[in-house]
Length: 307
Image (cartoon, rainbow, N blue to C red; front, side, top):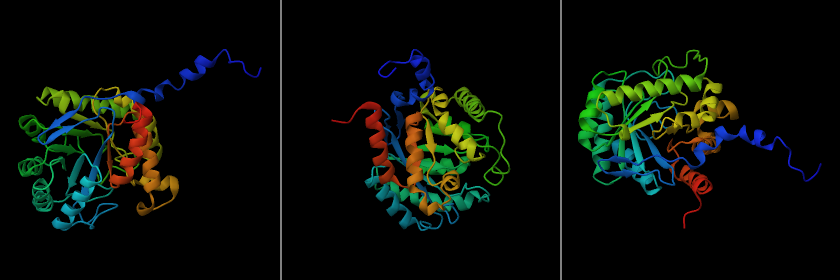
């Protein structure tokens, strides 16, 4: 009858409980050499700074070090908490670059940027020599798409340097990862992989509070896999470590909207909002200002408006 509450309302509402943990869940801050990345009542923004000729969206736009530094300073002014510097494209099908070439691309940018900003800088690399040089140049965080698997020296480097590390899930390599990826249960398999890499890192001496996890949206996943991971983020967040999610302008958004990378901003903002509601603590983005505004609204919904 109108006005009556159905007797099975509680059971109906219980279907939505998997969606609620991310609304208020927070993680301890991550300490870096240049300050703390704090997730208390807010989402952190990582700005993408690709110093490459062939990245899927911004490749070639900042291949010059001075332009890259200028763009990074703009991201910092727009509110980025971390600048993620990468010298090798990891788009699907990308070819690997030499260690020497990667160093030439990223070190001048990190050195120049460090002289002008005090915020955290991450180095996006799976090569230990590049990571070591980047840390010496002023980087604070190692962002390893291989979760410390591609270079056996990386895990000991991170442990010795006592810096935060981002462990990402990926099937195969950037060159092969999109060759018909298959999962029986993508959320469970990604969770189990991240948990295994997490414990391996801690066993090697990397502090638990320095480990950030990334489900690797778009890395060895088909469209539905990416959507399932976004729906299942609360399960990954339950591992108890800061969760980084990168959805910015990626192919799965293009497939949904039938749009190229230049026209995927709105889709990226929608996916970022879903990720934050699912428990993401850091969003990795090309569009710092727009994503920061969207996240402030979501954070107000989660924690209340800042006074």
